[in-house]
Each structure stands twice: as C-alpha cells, then as structure tokens.
Image (tube, rainbow, N blue to C red; front, side, top):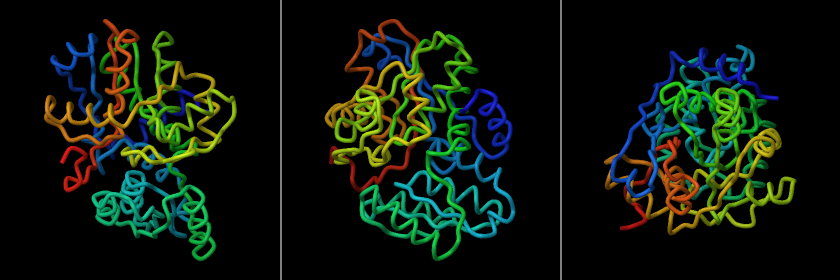
Amino acid sequence: MLTLKDIELAHERIRPFIHRTPILTNSSLNKLAGAELFFKCENFQKAGSFKIRGATNTVELLSDSELKRGIATTSSGNHGAALSMAVSRRGGSTKVVMPHNTPKIKVENVKRNGGEVVWCEPDQKFRESVLSDVVEETAATVVHPYNDERIMAGQGTCAKEILEDVPTIDCIVSPVSGGGLLSGSLVAAKNMKNSVKVFGAEPEEADDAYQSLKQGKIVPNKTINTICDGLRAEIGSKTFPVIQNLVDEIIPVSEKDIIESLQMIWERMKIIVEPSCSISLALILKNKMMFKNKNVGLIMSGGNVDLNKLPWK
C-alpha cells in the first residue's frame, strides 16, 4: 500500500526534472466561491501536466534492461507526452497507444517529446487490446498511466507541495479519472495534515469512480461522452482501494458547469487550462456551502488544449 514515505522519496527523485509549479489566487473567484482558492498550476508543468511527476518517478526506477526493451503505454495524451519526455531523457523509446479522437495538441505533444503514436478505438478494452499486441510484438516494458504505485507516488508530490506552500489549506479538490492523482493526493494530504478534506471531481458523463464508491466495487463507465478528454479512463485496481478508504467524497459535475468554469478561469486568471481541471472549480461553485470560508487547494492538472476547438467558439 502506498505510503507518505513513498511520496517523499519520489519527490526527492524527481525534483531535478520537474517544475515546482506556482500557486495562484484570484480575488474575483474567491468572492464568487465564498472561499479562499489556491490554484496549483500544473498547467505550467513540464510536458504541460502533472503527469510528468509520476512518469519521471517510474522511469527513474526502471532498470537499464527494462528501458532497453522500449517502453509502451496507453494514454489520452498527457501521460503519453510526459512518459515520452522522461524516457527520451534516459535515451529510451516509447510507444503510446492513443484513441484516434485525442485532441491534436496532445498527439503532437507526444511526438514532440519523442513518443511514437499507435492508434486505437476510443474505448478502454481497445486500448488494452492494442497495448497487448504492441507488447507481444516488441517485448516492451509497460508503464501504466495510473494503476502503478510508482505513478501514484509521483502524482502525490503535487498535494505535498500544496500543503508545504500553503499549510493553512482545509480542503483539496482533485480531478479523478483512473485515480493516480487522487490516490496519491489522498495519501500525501491525509498523512501530512489529517484534518484536510479531499474531494474528487468527476464528469457526470464518465462517473465510474463515483458509481464504484456507491457500489463498493469497481464498475465500468457507461459513457465517456465528456469534454474532459483526460478524465475518460476507468478507476484502477490499485487506486480504487486507496480512494475508497480515504476520500471524503467524489462529486460528479455536469458538462455545462465544466465549460462555464473553464471560460471563467481563462477570462479571470488569464491562464490556459484544460476542461479536465476546470472541473475542480465547477465542483466548488456548485457546492459553495461545503467550502464556505475555507482555504481550498485546486489541482489545475494540465493545460494542453486544442485552441482550434474551444467549447465556446
């Protein structure tokens, strides 16, 4: 089971290779929310998202022989780009199985960082099937995008930095998809400050984590028809037990609220973020009484947005 010590060791391991991203505030959004909001801007992170944390931690722990065989993974974009960057830095090669409907900017980001794209249908079972074929053909080493404690430990360093930089934080809101970021955030936050509440924000159109919590077992997504292309994966067998044990609540958020919050962040904060992280602000604005007069950390998970396909154009 993942521990705070694992996250601390991961932080030391990855520190030379990542940015310690800034935490921004915005008075107008504070007023609107009735809370003090602290935006952890992983949209400014290397490769454009928090994924470089887990990817770097994992790649640094790979043996030379594992690296020499080549690395393979599945990704909706951000993990693939981050993993390709981390592997390329060590002189290796990466094959990234990606759905053909992935935003162009994320595909280009993978290629720019040295990854080779292998296309698949936009469905979890197709991702896994194509990955299996790649591994059979190449004997590549698989680095899972979230269902791996090395990944989870790396992602947990984000919440660790939030609490180090703003010790008065009362709550943290994290997007949830496969659960690597949320599970790592939970272990970091709950062990550093046990009074902190941690919430997962999930699209209503891809709410398997919420449904899994309700049913007490992992259940698949019924739909992935969400603008949050980074939140379409299904909860993992290693991430789910951590989330089930530690999370305060997972709250589904509508597409309308996600898009409205996305535009609000762009207009008021003047930063580019993805719908997959504007969901955190949307959750707060729809549940203001839960956060009233609290200090809230929001993980802005990434900023890789296709500027030619903005949802309000």
